[in-house]
Image 1 (cartoon, rainbow, N blue to C red):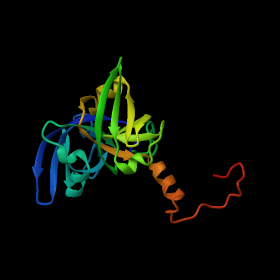
Image 2: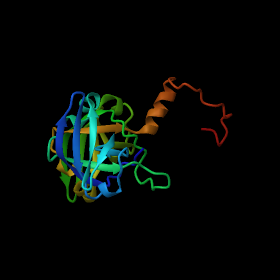
Image 3: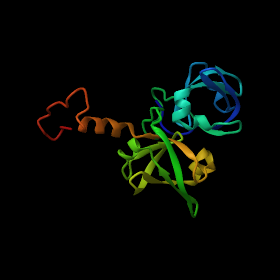
Length: 212
């Protein structure tokens, strides 16, 4: 579990193709000293496992399904990635609940500056678009963001403050680039229940003030 608050930007320094996986070495002098093998880490929002940790970075192995469903399939040497260690009990939850399970690849349709601020129009995967709402949460490349506007049934507009623009790889994007997108976890559960797809019926609360 993550929060969508990026702790550091890392750099892909090595890419190795193996028979069923692709291995990446991600350089991050800021985070590596506090990591150990087996740790979960969000890499552009995708939950991956650090299989080996060195003093300046860590290795991850990525399977074919993940390469196809996320922007990890586009990584090359010198790619910049957003990193966040897994949430620990007692940590602050400054963003929103992020699983690290990418719903699909979105596309940057427009980038527009507005003084010190920036607006990104992002085409969302269909399942995320179905859940998207103004002021709702969305995770793009591992960054917890708020939807400012729905400009098209599948396109949302995101506002970026200067700090986010400078300290994440969202500030490096160009129109047409792909991004990892994860829809709001709570929205998914609500949609599942309302569609009748839940395994357990809601309890009868009697409709009182404290009923949900």
